[in-house]
Length: 310
Image 1 (tube, rainbow, N blue to C red):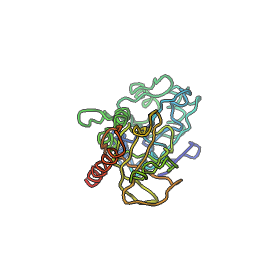
Image 2 (tube, one colour; image 1 turned 45 degrees about the vertical axis):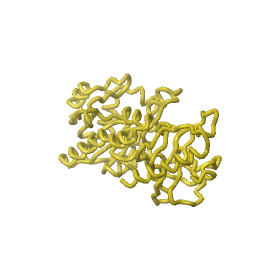
Image 3 (tube, one colour; image 1 turned 30 degrees about the vertical axis):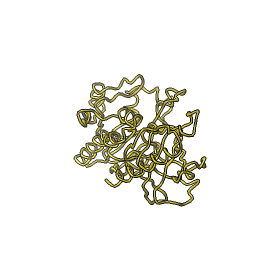
Image 4 (cartoon, helix red, strand yellow; image 1 turned 90 degrees about the horizontal axis):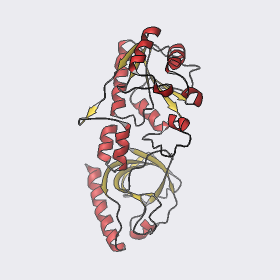
């Protein structure tokens, strides 16, 4: 896959293009990609994903504080490559770009710079200043500039259309199985192991404290989870707590991400790790004493081992 951070040297044979942020690269996006590849094969052309960096909301709403992404740019690049895309355009999203009308975008970028052969859009596609570029308008542009256009319907999973919003909602409530089902892969969080209070070691359950690598990456809701932990290209099983350590923290206002890695006793402070979420075990709760907490952690480990062996 060729990655283009500008269109200066962009060159593709009969480009079959689709446009979007593709947050999550979920099952709905994968359907678009599959169709993109089918059309490209039919026309002896090449597939092109046109996406943006930074996220448009950070430009159009500079005071944005609630942006939570399913995938970072690096994660999206890996997924697009995995799904066999020929070209990825990561276009710099700026205020100037945001002010382009759809007709300007189509003529200047899709037609003149990219030489688009066919444009594939989702069922709810809107683009351009004031989101004026709907499908009907695009059809007129296609006739005017001599390119083909195809609209895809929403992918239905269990009678619900897949969307990044629904996946985010599932993650925020800890419904990992639904989120992973909609994503088509296991939700993953990347981070660095940082020094912590080392309370877990005193309980017989040493934990690695994780600081997420991207401040805009969504973090699942409070609770205890079964996870796979990737360290230096090796995979381990573990259980992870996201929460405020209510048994030890009277204020209960500082979120922590702590993972107990099974059958592992290495020093990984400062190391980067990847956490694949498999299932939620239970809600976070406060215990009346250390003994009750340790008893529950022992049960959690058994549950996590079972979930991770399925």
